[in-house]
Figure 1: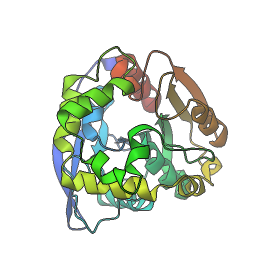
Figure 2 (figure 1 turned 60 degrees about the vertical axis):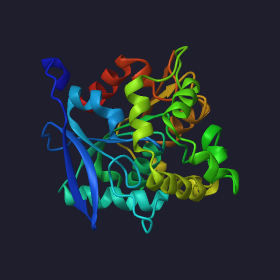
Figure 3 (figure 1 turned 180 degrees about the vertical axis):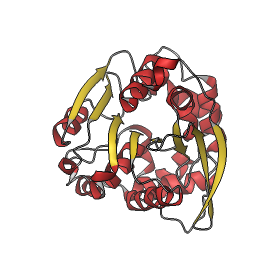
Figure 4 (figure 1 turned 90 degrees about the horizontal axis):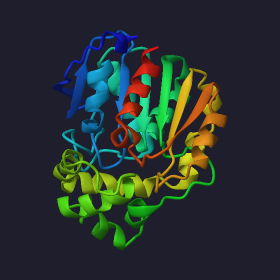
Length: 277
Protein backbone atom coordinates (compact mmCIF):
# COMPACT_ATOMS: atom_id res chain seq x y z
CA UNK A 1 0.00 0.00 0.00
CA UNK A 2 1.22 3.49 -0.78
CA UNK A 3 0.64 4.74 2.76
CA UNK A 4 3.27 2.43 4.20
CA UNK A 5 6.13 4.53 2.83
CA UNK A 6 4.91 7.68 4.53
CA UNK A 7 5.74 9.62 1.37
CA UNK A 8 3.80 12.79 0.64
CA UNK A 9 3.68 14.18 -2.89
CA UNK A 10 2.21 17.62 -3.40
CA UNK A 11 -0.26 17.64 -6.31
CA UNK A 12 0.60 19.47 -9.50
CA UNK A 13 -1.91 21.70 -11.31
CA UNK A 14 -2.56 21.27 -15.02
CA UNK A 15 -5.10 22.30 -17.65
CA UNK A 16 -6.59 19.70 -19.97
CA UNK A 17 -8.18 21.04 -23.15
CA UNK A 18 -11.30 18.96 -23.67
CA UNK A 19 -13.99 19.66 -26.28
CA UNK A 20 -12.89 23.28 -26.64
CA UNK A 21 -12.98 24.05 -22.95
CA UNK A 22 -10.32 24.07 -20.20
CA UNK A 23 -10.52 21.42 -17.49
CA UNK A 24 -8.47 22.11 -14.38
CA UNK A 25 -6.82 19.05 -12.83
CA UNK A 26 -4.80 18.37 -9.71
CA UNK A 27 -2.57 15.30 -10.06
CA UNK A 28 -0.11 13.37 -7.94
CA UNK A 29 1.68 10.11 -8.64
CA UNK A 30 1.59 8.07 -11.83
CA UNK A 31 -0.36 4.91 -11.04
CA UNK A 32 -1.61 2.89 -13.98
CA UNK A 33 -4.98 2.59 -12.22
CA UNK A 34 -5.24 5.96 -10.44
CA UNK A 35 -7.71 7.18 -7.88
CA UNK A 36 -10.11 9.66 -9.48
CA UNK A 37 -11.69 12.08 -6.99
CA UNK A 38 -14.97 13.87 -7.77
CA UNK A 39 -16.17 16.83 -5.70
CA UNK A 40 -19.58 18.10 -4.60
CA UNK A 41 -21.71 20.98 -5.93
CA UNK A 42 -20.15 24.39 -5.31
CA UNK A 43 -16.68 23.18 -4.38
CA UNK A 44 -13.74 21.98 -6.48
CA UNK A 45 -10.69 19.73 -6.58
CA UNK A 46 -9.34 21.85 -3.71
CA UNK A 47 -11.32 19.49 -1.43
CA UNK A 48 -8.98 16.63 -2.31
CA UNK A 49 -5.51 18.16 -1.87
CA UNK A 50 -4.69 16.16 1.27
CA UNK A 51 -5.87 12.75 -0.04
CA UNK A 52 -3.99 13.41 -3.30
CA UNK A 53 -0.82 14.14 -1.35
CA UNK A 54 -1.27 10.94 0.68
CA UNK A 55 -2.01 8.47 -2.09
CA UNK A 56 -1.77 10.15 -5.47
CA UNK A 57 -4.52 10.34 -8.06
CA UNK A 58 -6.41 12.80 -10.22
CA UNK A 59 -8.99 15.37 -9.12
CA UNK A 60 -10.71 17.51 -11.77
CA UNK A 61 -12.78 20.62 -11.29
CA UNK A 62 -16.09 19.48 -12.81
CA UNK A 63 -17.31 21.71 -15.68
CA UNK A 64 -19.00 24.76 -14.18
CA UNK A 65 -16.89 24.77 -11.02
CA UNK A 66 -13.49 25.86 -9.76
CA UNK A 67 -11.15 26.77 -12.61
CA UNK A 68 -12.73 24.59 -15.31
CA UNK A 69 -14.80 25.88 -18.23
CA UNK A 70 -18.17 27.47 -17.41
CA UNK A 71 -19.65 28.30 -20.80
CA UNK A 72 -23.36 28.99 -20.98
CA UNK A 73 -23.94 26.31 -23.62
CA UNK A 74 -22.55 23.41 -21.54
CA UNK A 75 -24.70 20.66 -20.07
CA UNK A 76 -24.41 20.73 -16.28
CA UNK A 77 -26.97 17.97 -15.66
CA UNK A 78 -26.07 14.56 -14.24
CA UNK A 79 -25.99 13.12 -17.76
CA UNK A 80 -23.75 15.97 -18.90
CA UNK A 81 -21.25 15.42 -16.09
CA UNK A 82 -21.26 11.67 -16.73
CA UNK A 83 -20.37 12.33 -20.38
CA UNK A 84 -17.63 14.70 -19.22
CA UNK A 85 -16.12 12.03 -16.95
CA UNK A 86 -16.10 9.52 -19.78
CA UNK A 87 -14.48 12.00 -22.17
CA UNK A 88 -11.87 13.02 -19.57
CA UNK A 89 -10.85 9.41 -18.96
CA UNK A 90 -10.61 8.88 -22.72
CA UNK A 91 -8.41 11.96 -23.10
CA UNK A 92 -6.18 10.75 -20.24
CA UNK A 93 -6.04 7.25 -21.77
CA UNK A 94 -7.36 5.61 -18.60
CA UNK A 95 -9.19 2.33 -19.07
CA UNK A 96 -9.57 1.33 -15.39
CA UNK A 97 -9.73 3.52 -12.31
CA UNK A 98 -10.41 3.49 -8.61
CA UNK A 99 -13.04 6.05 -7.77
CA UNK A 100 -13.89 8.32 -4.84
CA UNK A 101 -16.96 10.56 -5.05
CA UNK A 102 -18.45 12.96 -2.54
CA UNK A 103 -21.95 14.46 -2.70
CA UNK A 104 -22.75 15.26 -6.32
CA UNK A 105 -19.43 13.78 -7.39
CA UNK A 106 -20.53 10.45 -5.95
CA UNK A 107 -23.71 10.57 -8.05
CA UNK A 108 -21.68 11.36 -11.18
CA UNK A 109 -19.18 8.58 -10.51
CA UNK A 110 -21.85 5.99 -9.74
CA UNK A 111 -23.99 6.90 -12.75
CA UNK A 112 -20.90 6.49 -14.96
CA UNK A 113 -19.99 3.20 -13.23
CA UNK A 114 -23.51 1.86 -13.80
CA UNK A 115 -22.83 2.17 -17.51
CA UNK A 116 -19.27 0.79 -17.41
CA UNK A 117 -18.91 -1.28 -14.22
CA UNK A 118 -15.96 -3.34 -15.47
CA UNK A 119 -13.78 -0.22 -15.54
CA UNK A 120 -14.00 0.36 -11.77
CA UNK A 121 -11.43 -1.47 -9.64
CA UNK A 122 -12.47 -0.08 -6.23
CA UNK A 123 -14.91 2.54 -5.05
CA UNK A 124 -15.49 4.90 -2.12
CA UNK A 125 -18.73 6.84 -1.74
CA UNK A 126 -18.74 9.68 0.81
CA UNK A 127 -22.12 11.20 1.74
CA UNK A 128 -23.25 10.76 -1.85
CA UNK A 129 -26.28 12.40 -3.45
CA UNK A 130 -28.63 9.40 -3.58
CA UNK A 131 -29.39 7.66 -6.85
CA UNK A 132 -32.12 5.98 -4.80
CA UNK A 133 -35.84 6.40 -4.23
CA UNK A 134 -37.14 8.61 -1.44
CA UNK A 135 -34.55 11.39 -1.65
CA UNK A 136 -35.48 15.07 -1.33
CA UNK A 137 -33.08 18.00 -1.58
CA UNK A 138 -32.48 19.87 1.68
CA UNK A 139 -30.88 23.12 2.84
CA UNK A 140 -29.43 25.58 0.29
CA UNK A 141 -29.96 23.11 -2.57
CA UNK A 142 -33.70 23.09 -1.91
CA UNK A 143 -33.80 26.90 -2.08
CA UNK A 144 -31.83 27.00 -5.34
CA UNK A 145 -34.37 24.67 -6.96
CA UNK A 146 -37.24 27.10 -6.25
CA UNK A 147 -38.45 29.14 -9.29
CA UNK A 148 -38.04 32.70 -7.97
CA UNK A 149 -35.88 32.29 -4.89
CA UNK A 150 -33.25 30.15 -6.64
CA UNK A 151 -31.31 32.83 -8.56
CA UNK A 152 -31.31 35.06 -5.49
CA UNK A 153 -30.09 32.28 -3.20
CA UNK A 154 -27.28 31.19 -5.50
CA UNK A 155 -26.21 34.81 -6.00
CA UNK A 156 -25.63 35.28 -2.27
CA UNK A 157 -22.58 33.01 -2.11
CA UNK A 158 -20.21 35.68 -0.82
CA UNK A 159 -17.32 34.72 1.42
CA UNK A 160 -19.20 35.93 4.51
CA UNK A 161 -22.34 33.96 3.62
CA UNK A 162 -20.37 30.85 2.71
CA UNK A 163 -18.57 31.04 6.05
CA UNK A 164 -21.84 31.34 7.96
CA UNK A 165 -23.53 28.57 5.98
CA UNK A 166 -20.57 26.25 6.52
CA UNK A 167 -21.28 26.17 10.26
CA UNK A 168 -24.18 23.83 9.56
CA UNK A 169 -22.09 21.56 7.36
CA UNK A 170 -19.36 21.21 9.96
CA UNK A 171 -19.54 18.98 13.03
CA UNK A 172 -17.32 21.39 14.98
CA UNK A 173 -18.71 24.46 16.81
CA UNK A 174 -17.26 26.82 14.22
CA UNK A 175 -17.37 27.12 10.42
CA UNK A 176 -15.31 25.11 7.98
CA UNK A 177 -11.57 25.97 7.79
CA UNK A 178 -10.75 29.41 6.33
CA UNK A 179 -8.91 27.96 3.32
CA UNK A 180 -11.95 25.84 2.43
CA UNK A 181 -14.33 28.81 2.74
CA UNK A 182 -12.03 31.01 0.65
CA UNK A 183 -11.78 28.35 -2.07
CA UNK A 184 -15.57 28.02 -2.35
CA UNK A 185 -16.18 31.78 -2.33
CA UNK A 186 -13.45 32.55 -4.87
CA UNK A 187 -14.75 29.96 -7.29
CA UNK A 188 -18.39 31.03 -7.07
CA UNK A 189 -18.54 33.43 -9.99
CA UNK A 190 -21.40 34.02 -12.44
CA UNK A 191 -20.48 30.90 -14.40
CA UNK A 192 -20.72 28.72 -11.29
CA UNK A 193 -24.00 30.38 -10.32
CA UNK A 194 -25.42 29.46 -13.73
CA UNK A 195 -24.04 25.90 -13.54
CA UNK A 196 -25.43 25.38 -10.03
CA UNK A 197 -28.89 26.55 -11.04
CA UNK A 198 -29.00 24.26 -14.08
CA UNK A 199 -27.52 21.31 -12.21
CA UNK A 200 -29.87 21.38 -9.22
CA UNK A 201 -32.98 22.15 -11.25
CA UNK A 202 -32.24 19.26 -13.61
CA UNK A 203 -31.60 16.81 -10.74
CA UNK A 204 -35.17 15.96 -9.76
CA UNK A 205 -35.42 13.00 -7.35
CA UNK A 206 -37.00 10.77 -10.01
CA UNK A 207 -34.18 11.57 -12.45
CA UNK A 208 -31.61 10.59 -9.83
CA UNK A 209 -33.43 7.36 -8.94
CA UNK A 210 -33.59 6.30 -12.60
CA UNK A 211 -29.85 6.88 -12.95
CA UNK A 212 -29.27 4.41 -10.12
CA UNK A 213 -31.45 1.62 -11.46
CA UNK A 214 -28.39 -0.48 -12.32
CA UNK A 215 -26.33 0.04 -9.14
CA UNK A 216 -26.20 -3.72 -8.48
CA UNK A 217 -24.11 -4.12 -11.64
CA UNK A 218 -21.23 -2.35 -9.88
CA UNK A 219 -19.53 -5.35 -8.30
CA UNK A 220 -16.17 -3.75 -7.49
CA UNK A 221 -15.42 -3.66 -3.74
CA UNK A 222 -17.00 -0.49 -2.36
CA UNK A 223 -16.74 1.42 0.90
CA UNK A 224 -19.68 3.67 1.77
CA UNK A 225 -18.66 6.34 4.31
CA UNK A 226 -21.46 8.34 5.91
CA UNK A 227 -21.17 11.13 8.46
CA UNK A 228 -23.24 10.87 11.60
CA UNK A 229 -24.08 14.60 11.43
CA UNK A 230 -24.62 15.28 7.73
CA UNK A 231 -27.35 17.97 7.68
CA UNK A 232 -28.16 17.52 3.99
CA UNK A 233 -28.43 13.78 3.28
CA UNK A 234 -29.88 11.44 5.93
CA UNK A 235 -27.78 8.49 7.04
CA UNK A 236 -30.38 6.00 5.79
CA UNK A 237 -29.17 6.65 2.27
CA UNK A 238 -25.74 5.35 3.24
CA UNK A 239 -27.39 2.08 4.20
CA UNK A 240 -29.38 2.24 0.96
CA UNK A 241 -26.22 2.53 -1.12
CA UNK A 242 -24.53 -0.29 0.77
CA UNK A 243 -27.54 -2.53 0.07
CA UNK A 244 -27.87 -1.52 -3.59
CA UNK A 245 -24.23 -1.94 -4.64
CA UNK A 246 -22.94 -5.39 -5.49
CA UNK A 247 -20.14 -5.63 -2.88
CA UNK A 248 -20.26 -2.78 -0.39
CA UNK A 249 -19.40 -2.12 3.25
CA UNK A 250 -20.97 0.74 5.22
CA UNK A 251 -19.02 2.71 7.83
CA UNK A 252 -20.60 5.52 9.84
CA UNK A 253 -18.29 8.41 10.73
CA UNK A 254 -19.05 9.91 14.16
CA UNK A 255 -18.24 13.53 14.91
CA UNK A 256 -18.26 14.61 11.26
CA UNK A 257 -20.46 16.73 8.99
CA UNK A 258 -20.92 16.80 5.23
CA UNK A 259 -17.15 16.83 4.49
CA UNK A 260 -15.99 14.16 6.96
CA UNK A 261 -12.35 13.98 5.85
CA UNK A 262 -12.04 17.73 6.54
CA UNK A 263 -13.65 17.47 9.99
CA UNK A 264 -11.57 14.36 10.76
CA UNK A 265 -8.30 13.99 8.80
CA UNK A 266 -8.05 10.27 9.64
CA UNK A 267 -11.05 9.74 7.34
CA UNK A 268 -8.89 10.90 4.42
CA UNK A 269 -6.32 8.32 5.45
CA UNK A 270 -9.04 5.66 5.55
CA UNK A 271 -10.19 6.59 2.02
CA UNK A 272 -6.67 6.41 0.59
CA UNK A 273 -5.83 3.16 2.41
CA UNK A 274 -8.97 1.47 1.11
CA UNK A 275 -8.51 2.58 -2.47
CA UNK A 276 -4.80 1.73 -2.41
CA UNK A 277 -5.27 -1.84 -1.15
